[in-house]
Length: 318
Ligand code: ATP
Figure 1 (cartoon, rainbow, N blue to C red):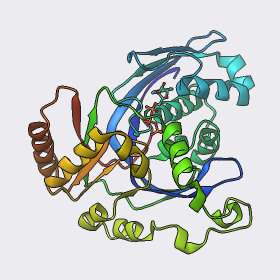
Figure 2: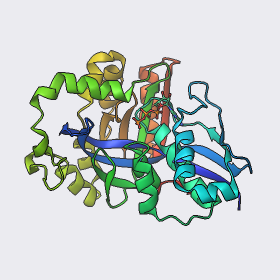
Figure 3: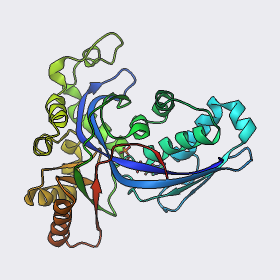
Figure 4: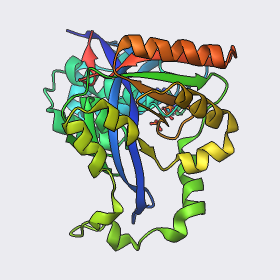
């Protein structure tokens, strides 16, 4: 077949810990990532030309070479020149549902979908591992987006270990439409403020043959709560180091987080570099209750909310 529609889910971070610096100037991270059922749709079809044509229905998303979906297509053409020559390029249409610059990996999941889509269209038969190796060259969150579900992510975020699925939990997401946070800004600001306390690079485990000292990574407790499928414990153990820089700079996000917390969810936290805040719930009913409460407490037309369910898989054919 030469035409596919793919579901590209967003993610939230249940744990985001900055361990220190790496020799490549990225941060060494320890994260727990969770796919959710808020998703973009990517339609991709072979166009028989030597070009990739991109269309996106969201005005803030660039439909040019800077788009991660376009970069993914170029990477595939570069890596598989014979298939590109035989089948040609593709038309790629992105239908955005995931808010942009929100800490939900919207761009990354679009890039992941294009890797999967071209693999299908060109009949390459790549394994998940091969797709994830390509994905790591596009961005740190892209490999996770291929497989989705629940996973520990270390290194820059590209080294993944799957965890048992949590797909009975729900997350209410809340984001001010007009606010977005640059991921690069958040990490750079963190380095400026806390870089002095980073351990020497060799101690982070970034140097081949070294392992990070156990006391530096604190993901163990939430990982065991996930293994036990204990929603209440997971909610209490949510953690995100980037809150230390994003919340002081964006008081609206702090207020949103504090307001959500007042309604006694399992837990509330900012996702990734923000500004989306999420609250966890055991059931759809509880999640809808939280959504109503937050909308009533902060009746601002700029505030968007979503009830989403945890999701088991990553990129999926419609
Ligand atoms: P992450 O959680 O991976 O850090 P994010 O959710 O914070 O990402 P994105 O929605 O991926 O942020 O967008 C960040 C920037 O990337 C946007 O400002 C946009 O200009 C650019 N971008 C490039 N490609 C895309 C895409 N396909 N979808 C959304 N944004 C894209």
